[in-house]
Image (cartoon, rainbow, N blue to C red; front, side):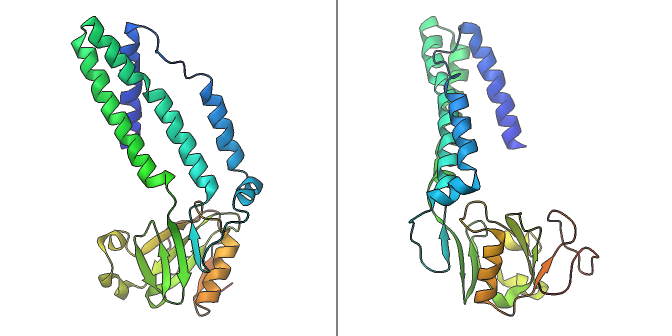
Length: 236
C-alpha cells in the first residue's frame, strides 16, 4: 500500500512540475536498456554463469550476483527518473515559484531516501541462507531456527523457489516477535540464493535426516492447515 501511494504521489508530482517545461533529462533511452538487462539476468543459464567460480563455505549461500545486478538496475532506473526532481527544484527557484520549489525539494529528499534504503537492503551482498547441524538461518527471518523447533516443511512444485517451514506451537515462545506474528509459519524465498528448490531440499535432508518434508498436491504455496487434504503426509 505504501509503495502504491508513493508511486501515485510521484506521478502526480512530476506531472505538476512538468507544467514548468519538459523534464531536464530525457529518460527514454535508458528504460528499455535497463529492462533488457533485468530480463537477461533472470534467465537460469545466465544466473548460473554469473555464479561460476564463486567460492562459498559449505552450508552457506550469499546473495547471487544476478540478484545484485537486478537490484542495481532497478536503483539506477529509479535514480535516473528521480534526478529530474532537484533540477526542477533549481528551475522553480530561478522562476520564483516557491510552491513548486518546495514540492520538488521534498520529492527529491523522499526519492533519494528510498534509493538509499534500496541500496542498503537490496544491492549489498549478504548471507542469505545457512543450513547446518544447528538449524537453519534465513536473512529474511532474522534468526536461527533449530531443527527441534520445526514440525515439518511444506514444499510446493519443483519449479517453485519457495517453501514454508511450520514450527511447533510449543516452540514459539522462544522466538522473536517477527516469528510469533507469523504464527510459526516461516516462508523461505530462494530467489536471492543460487539454490534451486530440489537442491535446498537435499541440503535440508543432509543436515537433518529426520526432518519431515511434505509436498502439496495443489499448485502454489498456501497457508497449511493441520489435516488439510492437499498435503501429502509422507516424507518425500
